Length: 495
Image (tube, rainbow, N blue to C red; front, side):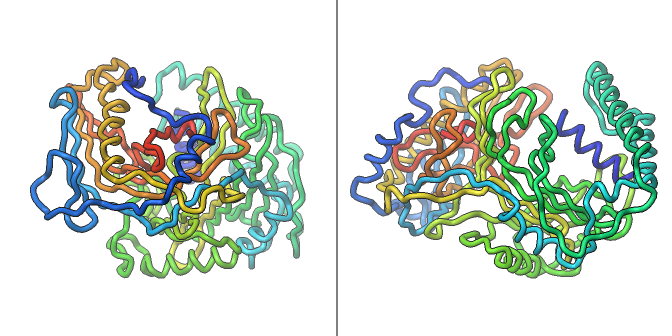
């Protein structure tokens, strides 16, 4: 029961304010031509003024080394910004280049399949639709419903809808049981991926091929850029992805809930209490070798983390298990292309718009065994429009940051949608110069890679009786500025 409970819990979690009036322009010009004209001025090296290290300053001055110190308040002392940040700035040159969304078909997905499933006996999902397998799924789902959907903490009205949904899924399983086979089919000696049209509004298998091992411990899946992948968004969305999961990589009776992730600084020592036997450095070497075998060039390791179920997790029965999670980033001229969010879309639930996922390449290992692999949102680089873009001086960037952090966040304190926020402490610990994909409004068929400054850290908001970190994911920037013209980039809109 533990495995299906963990799966349902994740599903429930997935199902489970306003900005102030701007005092200045908060998005870049919609005309890329104006941006390119600024970028084509005489290229200037990115300089950070160096002064002797001292106390926190009252203006945008840098400390010695590659750290930057600054401290200022907003309209009142309730809004406080502290910058004690590492400055990450590649050498360049910094290009501006055309990009478009990539896709997967049988031919392009086949090499991924061949490498990731090597050495396994393979079956199609239909060949594994046995009565015994469905009996187990039916029993586990029935128990999940009888137990009142463990892990659900939403309102009672919503819970009724969820119970109705899972009962409908249970009925579907029972209908499939009636025509299921008694034994699995014969495994294929060689699998040639063939296209399968998706069911309408089927976001999980839209244009996919799925192949599993006999014990259902391995799955290979491909989603493609498909139309009508969402009931309320019958438009083209760019979300192509290759997925691979291999439960056989985990110890027997392992907990299959991995949603706590801790950064690893020491890559030459096995993390204490992890239960792993190889070092993060070895895991990184394995991941890099796999990327090379797959023919993915111009990618470098961005992050190595230890992923596991939180110790206080309730209702998860089994042996705790840890994984090494590695994420990669595409590079152009050695400059990383950041992923500031999951996707960009200028729409909302009331008025959906097309979405374009940002590129991601990640994988997890349990010691020497690959547990999961994901490559999504592949970028196709086109013409380089500017070989070495003219960038704003760093002092000008920080002055712009001073303005925009107030515009974007100080107004939250007056917004009742966020509750009664009494104080906000913005802490910046990293400032990074990189490339990011930007688009024209509502255009997901192509865009530009442009240089950007990204600001990472925390935004601690205090309300009567509680507090929260608005910048909840330390791997994602909470503010991004175009390094050419200093305008604010909204990662959810993509421009």
